[in-house]
Image (tube, rainbow, N blue to C red):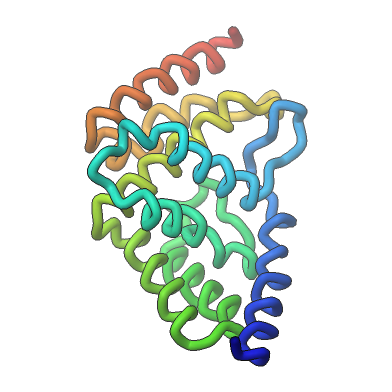
Amino acid sequence: MNAENLERQLVFIREAERLKNVLRSGHTSTGRRESTAEHSWRLCLMVLVFARELEGLDLARLLQICIVHDLGEAISGDIPAVDQHAVPDKSERERRDLQQLLTPLPELLQQMFVELWDEYEQARSPEARAAKALDKLETMIQHNQGANPPDFDYLFNLQYGRKYTSAEPLFAQLRELVDGDTRRRAAGE
Protein backbone atom coordinates (compact mmCIF):
# COMPACT_ATOMS: atom_id res chain seq x y z
CA MET A 1 0.00 0.00 0.00
CA ASN A 2 1.27 3.39 -1.00
CA ALA A 3 0.98 5.80 1.97
CA GLU A 4 0.92 8.84 -0.32
CA ASN A 5 -1.99 7.42 -2.34
CA LEU A 6 -3.87 6.53 0.85
CA GLU A 7 -3.47 10.08 2.13
CA ARG A 8 -4.67 11.50 -1.20
CA GLN A 9 -7.70 9.20 -1.08
CA LEU A 10 -8.48 10.46 2.43
CA VAL A 11 -8.23 14.04 1.18
CA PHE A 12 -10.81 13.20 -1.47
CA ILE A 13 -13.11 11.51 1.07
CA ARG A 14 -12.92 14.63 3.26
CA GLU A 15 -13.69 16.88 0.28
CA ALA A 16 -16.59 14.68 -0.85
CA GLU A 17 -18.20 15.29 2.55
CA ARG A 18 -19.25 18.64 1.12
CA LEU A 19 -22.04 16.78 -0.68
CA LYS A 20 -23.77 16.36 2.69
CA ASN A 21 -24.16 20.15 2.82
CA VAL A 22 -25.47 20.66 -0.71
CA LEU A 23 -29.18 21.28 -0.35
CA ARG A 24 -31.72 20.39 -3.00
CA SER A 25 -35.05 22.09 -3.65
CA GLY A 26 -37.06 19.14 -2.31
CA HIS A 27 -37.87 18.76 1.35
CA THR A 28 -37.83 15.77 3.65
CA SER A 29 -41.01 14.56 5.33
CA THR A 30 -40.16 16.79 8.30
CA GLY A 31 -39.84 19.91 6.13
CA ARG A 32 -36.04 20.17 6.11
CA ARG A 33 -34.42 20.56 2.69
CA GLU A 34 -32.78 17.32 1.65
CA SER A 35 -29.11 17.11 0.76
CA THR A 36 -27.66 15.68 -2.41
CA ALA A 37 -25.93 13.01 -0.30
CA GLU A 38 -29.31 11.92 1.09
CA HIS A 39 -30.72 11.73 -2.42
CA SER A 40 -27.77 9.62 -3.58
CA TRP A 41 -28.13 7.32 -0.57
CA ARG A 42 -31.78 6.61 -1.28
CA LEU A 43 -31.05 6.14 -4.96
CA CYS A 44 -28.58 3.38 -4.00
CA LEU A 45 -31.15 1.94 -1.60
CA MET A 46 -33.62 1.73 -4.49
CA VAL A 47 -31.11 -0.34 -6.47
CA LEU A 48 -30.92 -2.82 -3.58
CA VAL A 49 -34.70 -2.90 -3.09
CA PHE A 50 -35.43 -3.52 -6.78
CA ALA A 51 -32.40 -5.76 -7.42
CA ARG A 52 -34.53 -8.79 -8.35
CA GLU A 53 -36.44 -6.75 -10.91
CA LEU A 54 -33.16 -5.43 -12.34
CA GLU A 55 -32.08 -8.88 -13.46
CA GLY A 56 -29.49 -8.85 -16.19
CA LEU A 57 -27.87 -5.62 -15.04
CA ASP A 58 -24.47 -5.41 -13.41
CA LEU A 59 -25.65 -4.22 -9.98
CA ALA A 60 -22.15 -3.34 -8.80
CA ARG A 61 -21.70 -1.07 -11.82
CA LEU A 62 -25.19 0.38 -11.34
CA LEU A 63 -24.37 1.23 -7.71
CA GLN A 64 -21.06 2.78 -8.75
CA ILE A 65 -22.85 4.98 -11.26
CA CYS A 66 -25.46 5.99 -8.67
CA ILE A 67 -22.77 6.93 -6.15
CA VAL A 68 -20.83 9.04 -8.68
CA HIS A 69 -23.69 10.64 -10.63
CA ASP A 70 -24.04 13.79 -8.45
CA LEU A 71 -20.54 14.02 -6.92
CA GLY A 72 -19.70 17.15 -8.90
CA GLU A 73 -22.46 18.99 -7.06
CA ALA A 74 -20.11 19.13 -4.05
CA ILE A 75 -18.38 22.05 -5.78
CA SER A 76 -21.11 24.28 -7.31
CA GLY A 77 -24.25 22.84 -5.79
CA ASP A 78 -27.46 21.39 -7.16
CA ILE A 79 -29.59 22.83 -9.92
CA PRO A 80 -33.23 22.10 -9.08
CA ALA A 81 -34.97 19.80 -11.54
CA VAL A 82 -37.48 22.53 -12.43
CA ASP A 83 -34.63 24.89 -13.43
CA GLN A 84 -32.34 22.50 -15.32
CA HIS A 85 -33.75 23.44 -18.72
CA ALA A 86 -32.53 27.02 -18.18
CA VAL A 87 -28.88 26.00 -17.61
CA PRO A 88 -27.45 25.06 -21.01
CA ASP A 89 -23.97 24.26 -19.69
CA LYS A 90 -25.16 22.15 -16.72
CA SER A 91 -23.43 19.00 -17.94
CA GLU A 92 -20.11 20.69 -18.69
CA ARG A 93 -20.16 22.48 -15.33
CA GLU A 94 -20.87 19.29 -13.39
CA ARG A 95 -18.15 17.38 -15.23
CA ARG A 96 -15.63 20.17 -14.60
CA ASP A 97 -16.65 20.28 -10.91
CA LEU A 98 -16.31 16.50 -10.65
CA GLN A 99 -12.81 16.67 -12.13
CA GLN A 100 -11.90 19.37 -9.62
CA LEU A 101 -13.20 17.28 -6.72
CA LEU A 102 -11.29 14.24 -7.94
CA THR A 103 -7.94 16.07 -8.13
CA PRO A 104 -6.48 14.49 -4.96
CA LEU A 105 -7.11 10.96 -6.20
CA PRO A 106 -4.55 8.90 -8.11
CA GLU A 107 -5.00 9.23 -11.87
CA LEU A 108 -6.52 5.76 -12.37
CA LEU A 109 -9.24 6.48 -9.80
CA GLN A 110 -9.92 9.89 -11.34
CA GLN A 111 -10.32 8.24 -14.72
CA MET A 112 -12.66 5.56 -13.33
CA PHE A 113 -14.92 8.12 -11.67
CA VAL A 114 -15.08 10.34 -14.75
CA GLU A 115 -15.85 7.32 -16.97
CA LEU A 116 -18.71 6.31 -14.65
CA TRP A 117 -20.04 9.88 -14.70
CA ASP A 118 -19.76 10.09 -18.50
CA GLU A 119 -21.53 6.75 -18.85
CA TYR A 120 -24.39 8.08 -16.70
CA GLU A 121 -24.56 11.47 -18.36
CA GLN A 122 -24.66 9.95 -21.86
CA ALA A 123 -26.93 7.06 -20.78
CA ARG A 124 -24.74 4.77 -22.83
CA SER A 125 -25.31 1.50 -21.00
CA PRO A 126 -28.31 -0.35 -19.57
CA GLU A 127 -26.91 0.38 -16.09
CA ALA A 128 -26.64 4.11 -16.82
CA ARG A 129 -30.18 4.23 -18.19
CA ALA A 130 -31.44 2.38 -15.10
CA ALA A 131 -29.57 4.86 -12.89
CA LYS A 132 -31.20 7.75 -14.75
CA ALA A 133 -34.67 6.24 -14.41
CA LEU A 134 -34.22 5.51 -10.71
CA ASP A 135 -32.70 8.97 -10.17
CA LYS A 136 -35.80 10.62 -11.64
CA LEU A 137 -38.12 8.34 -9.68
CA GLU A 138 -36.30 9.03 -6.40
CA THR A 139 -36.61 12.77 -7.00
CA MET A 140 -40.33 12.46 -7.72
CA ILE A 141 -40.89 10.25 -4.67
CA GLN A 142 -39.15 12.85 -2.50
CA HIS A 143 -41.23 15.63 -4.02
CA ASN A 144 -44.38 13.71 -3.12
CA GLN A 145 -43.17 12.70 0.33
CA GLY A 146 -41.72 16.05 1.37
CA ALA A 147 -43.29 18.66 3.61
CA ASN A 148 -42.87 21.27 0.88
CA PRO A 149 -43.76 24.97 0.80
CA PRO A 150 -47.37 25.80 -0.16
CA ASP A 151 -46.40 26.90 -3.69
CA PHE A 152 -44.54 23.67 -4.53
CA ASP A 153 -45.32 22.51 -8.10
CA TYR A 154 -46.18 18.83 -7.73
CA LEU A 155 -47.53 18.63 -11.28
CA PHE A 156 -43.96 19.13 -12.53
CA ASN A 157 -43.44 15.48 -11.62
CA LEU A 158 -45.91 14.29 -14.25
CA GLN A 159 -43.52 15.15 -17.11
CA TYR A 160 -40.18 14.96 -15.31
CA GLY A 161 -37.81 12.26 -16.56
CA ARG A 162 -40.41 10.52 -18.70
CA LYS A 163 -37.80 9.66 -21.35
CA TYR A 164 -36.00 7.39 -18.88
CA THR A 165 -38.90 6.19 -16.74
CA SER A 166 -40.92 5.00 -19.74
CA ALA A 167 -38.14 2.97 -21.35
CA GLU A 168 -38.47 -0.30 -19.40
CA PRO A 169 -41.52 -2.08 -17.94
CA LEU A 170 -40.25 -1.91 -14.33
CA PHE A 171 -39.66 1.84 -14.50
CA ALA A 172 -42.94 2.46 -16.32
CA GLN A 173 -44.84 0.55 -13.64
CA LEU A 174 -43.06 2.43 -10.86
CA ARG A 175 -43.73 5.66 -12.73
CA GLU A 176 -47.44 4.91 -12.86
CA LEU A 177 -47.52 4.39 -9.09
CA VAL A 178 -45.51 7.55 -8.40
CA ASP A 179 -47.69 9.55 -10.82
CA GLY A 180 -50.72 8.45 -8.79
CA ASP A 181 -49.04 9.79 -5.66
CA THR A 182 -48.26 13.03 -7.51
CA ARG A 183 -51.87 13.52 -8.57
CA ARG A 184 -53.10 12.90 -5.01
CA ARG A 185 -50.52 15.29 -3.57
CA ALA A 186 -51.35 17.99 -6.15
CA ALA A 187 -55.04 17.61 -5.28
CA GLY A 188 -54.20 18.22 -1.64
CA GLU A 189 -54.96 14.70 -0.45
